[in-house]
Amino acid sequence: MSLTDAAIGRIKAMIVDGELLPGDRLPKEADLAERLGISRSSLREAVKALELVNVLDVRRGDGTYVTSLEPPLLLEAMSFAVDLHGDDTVLEFLEVRRLLEPAATAMAATRMDDAGLAALRASVDAPGDSPGVDALVAADLAFHRTVVAAAGNAVLTSLLDSLAAPTQRARLWRGLTQRDAVSRTIDEHHAICAALEARDPELARAAATMHIGGVELWLRAQLDAGADPGRAAGA
Image 1 (cartoon, rainbow, N blue to C red):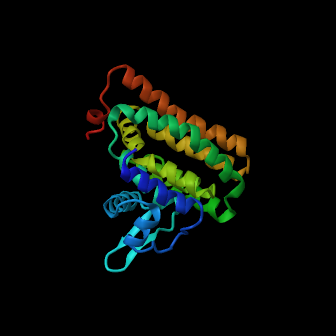
Image 2 (image 1 turned 45 degrees about the vertical axis):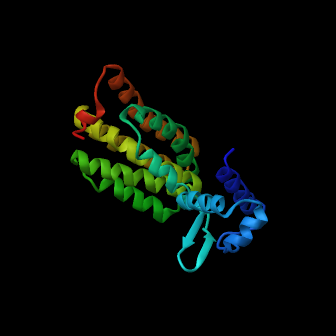
Image 3 (image 1 turned 90 degrees about the vertical axis):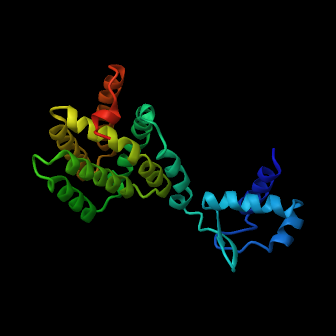
């Protein structure tokens, strides 16, 4: 383990043990380095690393603070990594979505209030019967974000939101190349919405699984046939 890694581990332990709480200011560099038994240069490198992943907030001329440590903030680093994915990993992102999003949809069935359901239904109907592919994909992203947010779990919401970018291209590709993709997506949104309105978690889970699984199965078939998602989507 490098000295920087050791310093990161010690600062992390201070946060986990409650010695440093969200919003707390770190001790002065010299004092903290002495306390942790590390050099000031190792401490600086550790602080830089923890700043990059939004654990620490370095305020020039003021000091270094522990951030809020809220899930959306901490998961921004993962979103950055996800954005660097290659087209050959899109299927893996869809697999993760298929595992997580139906659970979130089931949770939303018991937690979404009447006003949220009404707004969701209106958003499903808003694009009309024959929206363009770009409009459909935008509506699809907004639909799923609304449903997942209604689950009321910030970690789950942040994780799934970070998966939206890589799977967006697959959805666009499908809309451009599969004849009934637009109508099928609209019908599946209606099915999910109906399950949520029925307050039926298992029906909601099944509807979401079928919706996401359909895209996954289609993409798997295209990749097995040697298709290029980037070229097909015009990327």
